[in-house]
Length: 324
Ligand code: ADP
Ligand code: DP6
Ligand code: CO
Image 1 (spheres, rainbow, N blue to C red):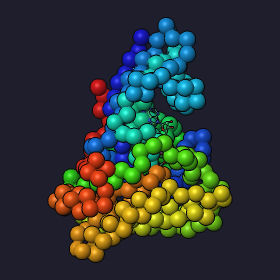
Image 2 (image 1 turned 135 degrees about the vertical axis):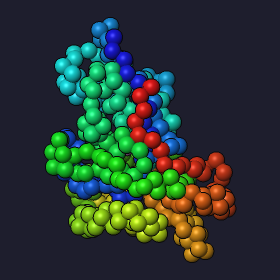
Image 3 (image 1 turned 30 degrees about the vertical axis):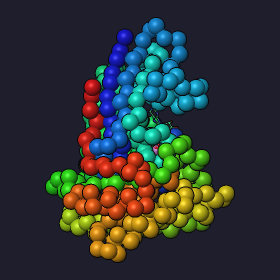
Image 4 (image 1 turned 120 degrees about the vertical axis):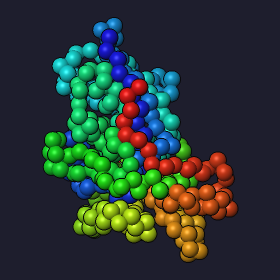
């Protein structure tokens, strides 16, 4: 019996990954930049054993159906190949993050699975190679191997596409991200399907591709200079551009709900009142507010004018992969 256990935290992109150049290897169209968070995470244990006659996948103690197990199996096939191991596996995972709701469960989920397999099969992967492996499960998962600010270098092959830490002199510890939980139910359009449809059909995708490298370069300069307003405004603009592309897809779609707009408006209002804060959104209706740690409580109190207390969750910079 071969057993491994790991914890991975979610990450939220400030410069988004949106579109694949290679679907099978999950090579992205553009570099992305994220912040790994402390508040949401996944813990996964994998056991490869001769006693098993098929892969099984439990999520939060409930046995998953064929379709969801199949996705995990496809990932297990990759590590079985790497380790020349023929054994089936039992995967038990606990998500301390809502599932498939645009809160990045695939980033922590697949990073934790990759690391658990690394340990179980004694693959002895470096962090970079673990990041490459996690990427094959879900693109954003390659960034959850690392703490704090992380950049995913898109590369142009399996070997050259991986994430790495963006040095920031510890500045990430002065920041916070407030989550406004608008809907924690499973989204209608998965990130995977949403970005594919956008790449294939959106007239705005070209504009996304042409401007995002500059956003990323400017974001890194802002991190280096510890310039919060610069980083926040680039991130907010980058998220709006990403969401703009979905409106021009055929058929069109949006991850926004009326309450997402309410949250954006609240952020703009606080900013107009002199409190530095900026929003970002992923493939789901929930809104994340980037702010300075010192302002987090004040901003949360103001958000209570618009949202219930249990809809607001505070997150800070979080750690990379941990073996359990
Ligand atoms: P999210 O916004 O939550 O990342 P995605 O559409 O990107 O939503 O991904 C959801 C998918 O991530 C699920 O369908 C499932 O395949 C995968 N996933 C989520 N949590 C786990 C987990 N703990 N273990 C394995 N896979 C997971
Ligand atoms: C909008 O990594 O979830 O959150 O690679 O197909 O599994 P797959 O998609 P995923 O996409 C994340 C998209 C995003 C932006 C981001 O996290 O960079
Ligand atoms: Co995801």
